[in-house]
Length: 282
Image (cartoon, rainbow, N blue to C red; front, side, top):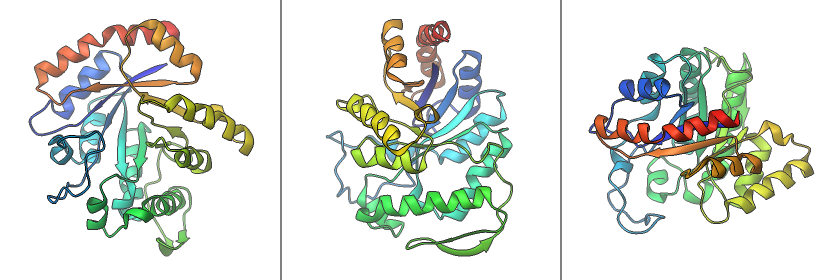
């Protein structure tokens, strides 16, 4: 069982360098940060959790820049997007960015991806909300071509390019693991088709989706052991962690509030018991 931390990093919260060093010193396995290129001022799309949208959604740093700093001052800490909004990027440029981070970090990049929930944000990038998952799929397949082929080409409905050279290739082979951060029944089908992991939030119904994942892997002949399940949740006891492990969760990601360095370090120290419980279960 691995223990990671997720965060909305801003210019008024703990910086990448002290955060990464603190995580590695305390035995955390990974750091995951969010992405929103912007939030449209119209606010037509309501916040999924209700109420006012927290300002961190538009104040957070660009994730690859933040994670590159974190990787540069650590040796073992894995760095991940939780999640990158893939339809908002050109796949060739995003493939280059992801491969560069994986190469510079020595193969420590975890590629958490999603299609986005804010319709106007997607539309500002030229993507219709109804098409977002179809666009994401083609982008992922096109990026895989860029990561694994010398003369990479892709011809689809949303992505179309003749052979290109995209270097450097990722250190991880065949490419950084892709984790889908969604929990619909269709998300599980997408994971089995073209991803290596799942990033669910521990909300009502996630366990039923886990059962769907297990059943669909068997139906499709996909090795379930090859799909990592990384759950965003709080952990109250070692028994809780052990139960999650028995269910097939192999990573728990704890939330780090967006706060000052002193406050953030206090929270991380408070999570020390979870790291120890995870070690005991190894």
